[in-house]
Amino acid sequence: MTEPIIQFKHVEKRFNDQTVIPDLNFTVNKGEFITILGSSGSGKTTTLKMINGLIAPSAGEILIDGQKLRELDLVKLRRHMGYVVQQIGLFPHMTIGQNIAVVPKMLHWDKEEINNRVKELLSLVQLNPAEYMNRYPQQLSGGQQQRVGVARALATNPPYVLFDEPFGALDALTRMELQREVKKIHESLAEKTFMFVTHDINEALFLGQRVMIMHEGRIVQFATPEEIVRHPATEFVEQLLGTIRQNQGLWRQPTVNRNIEKNGRQ
Image 1: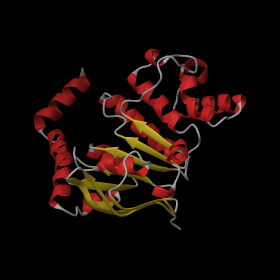
Image 2: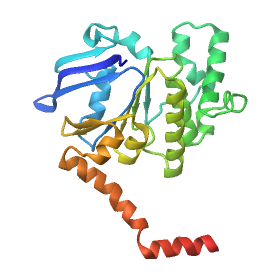
Image 3: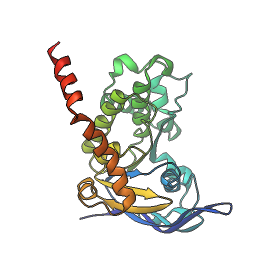
């Protein structure tokens, strides 16, 4: 049985006299992994930031777990809503353990409880607590720092975690590794709701149980990856899928195949 946890009802967003989101309606259910896909200016990040109150809607209603967002204490909401961004924002003067513990300390968790939680989360993101807990951010690679960002977002065991293009600045191999890790983390935390913004269609289709495709502030398709691939709803979605097919076509070229076979024999 599905349980709605995030709902947008006729949400509109204007910046001065420019309407960037004219009429947004969707429901996200508890435990889903939703990816939001779109090009720059499509409204995907604005949508994400309206969920945790960083941006207020100009009209319409947003419901979080059945409660009207405008009636909630936003500070309390954000402390129980994980948020992972590309610019991770780790405090350079704090150790990795201290960075992860920031919000639990603000919530006056017991010191032993915090220590155990930090170790648990470092293990979850594949960083050995004994090796990394007392390091500083500058001693970590970009991929390792992003893992810490994910751990920090999960620190208070939030029911929802928002990701705003967190892997955009990473190299391709590290990005693929972290995609697999985040997917595995979600599978192990069955009741948590993940919403992940990306402009990369491969990332969106790999991670999302459902994919919300946005174009010019509107949802043009919101469906499973399989449904999108089989039945693209608009020409824009078809064009996005065409970028995948174009790359797949490269591997079918005889010259490329011969080079791969040649390199494999060396």
